[in-house]
Amino acid sequence: MKTLRSYVLGEWHEADSGFVTLVDPSTEEPVARASSRGIDFAAVLDHARGPGCDGLRSLTFAQRGALLKEMSRVLKDRRDELFEISRINSGTTAADASFDIDGAGGALAWYANFSRTLGDRGILAEGEASALSKDGSFQAGHVLVPRPGAAVLINAFNFPAWGFAEKAACALLAGMPVIVKPATATAMLAERFIEIIIGAKLLPEGALQMVCGSTGDLLDRLGAHDVLAFTGSAATARTLRDSPSLAHANTRFNVEADSLNAAVLAPSASDATFDLFIRDVVREITQKTGQKCTAVRRIFVPPDRLGAVQDALAARLAAVVTGNPAEPSVTMGPLATRGQLEDALDGLRALGGVARRVHGTGVRADGRGSPAGKGFFVEPVLFRADDPRAAGPVHEREVFGPAATLMRYDGTAANAAQFVGLGGGMLVTSVYGDDTAWTRDYVVHGAAHAGRLYIGSAEAAGSAPGSGAVFPHTQHGGPGRAGGGAELGGLVGLRLYLQRVAIQAAPPMLAAAHGDANG
Ligand code: NAP
Image (cartoon, rainbow, N blue to C red; front, side, top):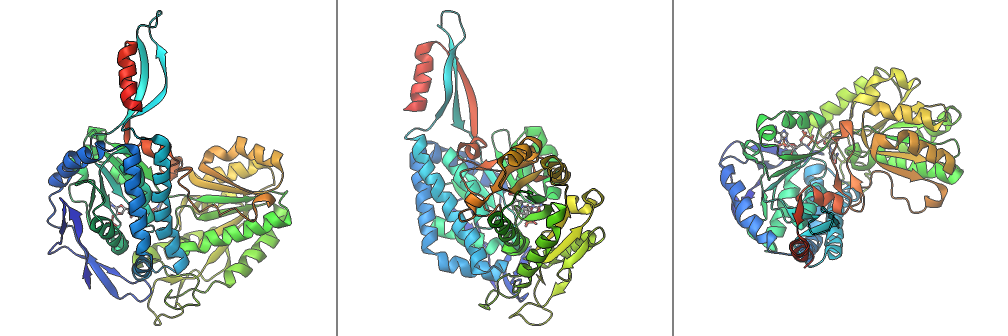
C-alpha cells in the first residue's frame, strides 16, 4: 500500500503515524494511506509568506501565466497514469476522470492564456483616475496588488484534480503562494498531480506546498493577509466560519459548498429543446455518480409534461450500467467512500419520506465487475413529489449521489422561480425553453437564486455542454447554501487573492504609481 506524502518546506514529508486508509471504492481494497503527522505548520506558513511570496511577486502576470501553461503541459503528458489513479482511488469511469483531470488542465491553460490580457506587469490598475481637488492637483485611482500572505486551498473529495487546479491557477496567477489540502479520501490523485508539477521544477521555491491529511493547527495560524479558499460541505464551512482565530484575524475566506441545483422545463420547449433537457438532466444525475456540486437535484416541469419527462428520464436511467469502471461496459462507477454511500442512502430515505420513488431501488447495489457485497454502489434514483411546497427535504438535503426529484410547477416563470428559490441559494439553475419572453421573465424573478443561469434552447441543442460543466470564463459560486463565494470568471477569480489599494496623490505621483502598475 502506498504511503502518501506531503510536500512542505521544499521537501517530501512522510509521516510515521496517524494514518487514514484510502480504498478502491469498487472493491474496498486498501490502496494508500495518508497522514500529515509531524508537519510544522508555522514553518509551512513562513515558507509560503517568505520565499513563496517573494518568488511570485518578482514575476509579471504574463510570466506567472507561462508557469500555468507548463503545469498544464506536464500534467497532460501523464494523462493515462492519472486516469488510472483516479479509477483506483475515486472509482471513476474514463469519462468521469476526464471531467476532473482534463478539466484541471483546461483551467490552467485557460488562465495561462488569460494572463496575456493582463500583460507584462506585476500590479493591475483598476478603473480611471478621478480628481479629488477642484483644480485637479490631487487625484485618486485604484491598484490591485498580490496579498502578502499564503493562500490555503482546501478541496472536496469529488474533484481532486480540478479542485486543485481551478483554485491554484487563480492564486498563483495573482501572485500568492498556495498550500493545498486535498480531501484525504481521494488524495492519491492530488498527491501525484503535485508530484508531477514539483518534479518539473517549474515554480519558485515556496510557491506550492501540499498537505496530505489533517491541517493540524494551520488554520489557527492564518493571519490578516492570508486567504482560505474552501470547497466542501456546508456543515464544514460553518465549522470553519465559527473558528475564533479566522474571525479574529479577519482572514479572507471564500466558500464553495452544497447546492440543490434546479432544472426547469418551460412550456414553450420545442422537441429539440425537450431532448436537450432530458439529455442534460440524465448526465447531471449520473456523471461522477452524482457527486458534483453542480448536479441537478430538482427538476421542475409544467403539469402536462410530467408524464413524458418521467418516462423519458426513467428510460435513459435504465440504460445506465453501474459497476467497477475497470469493466468496459460500465457507464457509472461507485460512490467514493463508505461514508458517502451511507450518507447518500440516508438522504434517499429522507427524500422517500416526502416523494414517491419512480425509478431505482434507493438501496446499495452490487456493481458489475465487482465481488458481490463489495463496493459503494447505488443505481440512479428518480423521485416524484406532487407538491413542491410540501417536499421540505427535497429542497434542503443535498443527496450527494445519482438522484433527483421531479416536481410540477404551473408553467409561469414566476412560479418556477418561487419553487427554485426553496433551495436556499444555488450554484446553477438551468432553464430550457424557446420563448424569449418567458426566459426574460425567469431572469427577472429567479436568476438571483443561483450564481449561474444556463439557458437551453433549440439553437443551442447541438453545442450546449450541460449545466454541470464549470468554465473558467464564468463565475463559479452562488449565494446562500452554496457558500456565497466566487471563483473563476477571469479576473473575478483573481480578486480573492489581490488587495485593492486606493492611491491618492498629485498627478505625477499617481502617474508614477499607475506607471508602475502599467509598466
Ligand atoms: P467536507 O467533508 O466538508 O470536506 C471538504 C474538505 O474540508 C476536505 O478536504 C476535508 O478534509 C476538509 N475538512 C473537513 N473538516 C475540516 C476542518 N475542521 N479543518 C480543515 N479542513 C477540514 O466535504 P466533502 O465530503 O469532501 O465534499 C462534498 C461536499 O462538497 C458536497 O457537499 C459538495 O456539494 C461540496 N462541493 C462543492 C463544490 C463547489 O464548488 N461549490 C465543489 C465540490 C464539492 P478531510 O478529507 O481530511 O476530512
